[in-house]
Image 1 (tube, helix red, strand yellow):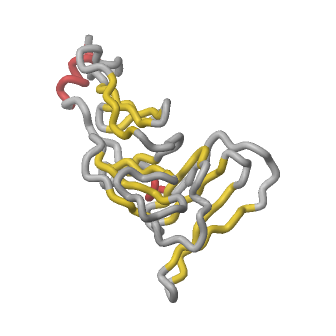
Image 2 (cartoon, one colour):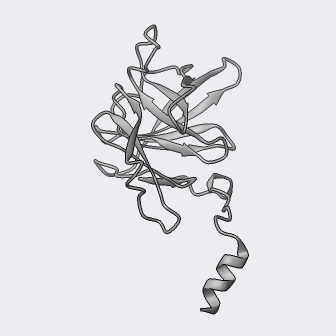
Length: 171
C-alpha cells in the first residue's frame, strides 16, 4: 500500500485501487474506493512521486496488443493517460512480477518475480536497449524491493498550515 497526495493505493484482483484519505488520516467513506487500473495482471506497482504517476509491470498492457513480452506501463494517479513506459528490453523478464522498485535518477527498475528471481536492468547506450540482469542473492521469495537513495524519496509537503499546527500544540 502506498500513501500519496491524500490517497491510499493498493492492488488486488488484477487491478489498482485508490481511496481518498481524510485530513486526520482515515479513509473518506463518502468517496469509497475507486478502481484506477483494471483488466491487467498487475500485482505490484510503483508510485512516481516526482511526476505523480503509477508505474506497473504487465504482460498484457491495456490497448497495446502488438507486444508479447512484459512491459512497464505509466498512468496518471487517476488512471488516465496510460502509455507504455518501458518496452525496449532485450528480454521478456517483466512477467510474473511480485514486487517492483524504480530509481528515478538513473531511470532503472529493480524487481522480483513470483519464481524467486531478483532482477535489475541496465541501459545499453549503443543499442538503445535495456538488458535485464539476474542478481544472484540467496532466497526463494521476495516480499519487497526497495531502492534507498535520497533522490528516490518523496519530498515532504506541508498538508496543514503552520498556524493550525501551532494552535493544536498550544491546546
